[in-house]
Image (cartoon, rainbow, N blue to C red; front, side):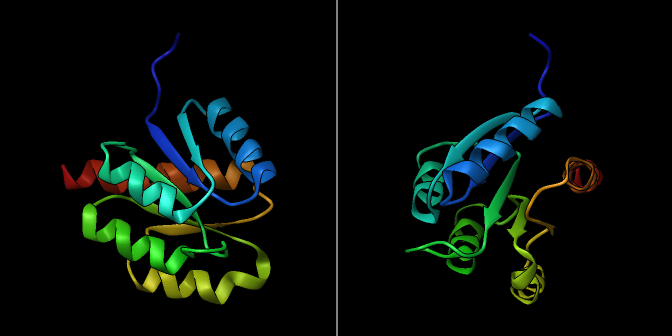
Length: 129
């Protein structure tokens, strides 16, 4: 087993999106935890899940991306969050970045873009240390 580049928590209500994200992230060398809602993500973080990065969908039933980001920030203000969005959600993604998200990637995912965003976030984390 090779060393992981870190743990990514994928938060998306669509199973197919979680599956594709998980496959890509695993290929890129990350360990992956997936949940189907913002509430599950918040509960997991409260109960000790320690991801290095959260890949967070904006549009979800129940707790949406805005609510989830705010709740995660209350628990762990420094937790890197990468917003995941469809093209029509770009304004919402920009608003979330303005609220403190660390970046965004468009759906459908492109492995090069996902890798670049994760490297950018890891660079920021390393600079803070």
